[in-house]
Length: 199
Image (cartoon, rainbow, N blue to C red; front, top):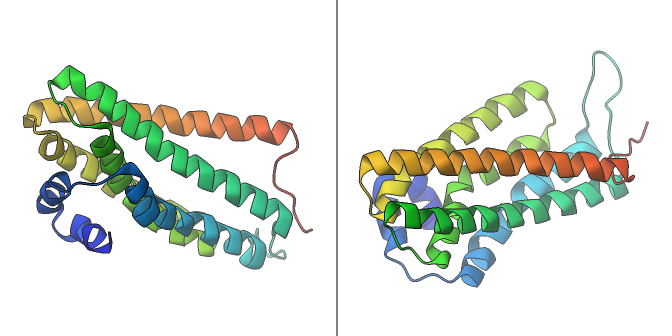
């Protein structure tokens, strides 16, 4: 797992070819990659919101209670795990349009590796700062999009022009999934499952 993560950052084109040629199961992928890397942003956010907090102006740091932060950590962790599966399922469904026939497992593996920069970028949550979060978050999103556009043609075995259209469709669905997750968060907050501050 770790050598693929390193390879995606140092030589992504070659790494996509290696990943495509491997026999990987969804359960093994989740156990050795997704469950571990998705924990990075969740745990960092828990620590950042309970121990460091946000500073607004010259005031004292604003922190979450441990119970509230734990609730939100668990929900965000589960959402990330589900998001990888949903994106994998969409990629599998969409592949038929481009005369590609990857297995569902290959599509979930592809989605998981594409999300790797987002997971690693979650380290920024250790220190809740708007500017730091925007900088690292933007960099992580940009590299995720790059991996998507560079990886689809190689991983799916389709021409570059079709790969561009395929990648654009996946990106659009990813944005819809993100908006849906935000909407679900707002709905849950309405039912009382929201942040509780210490002061």
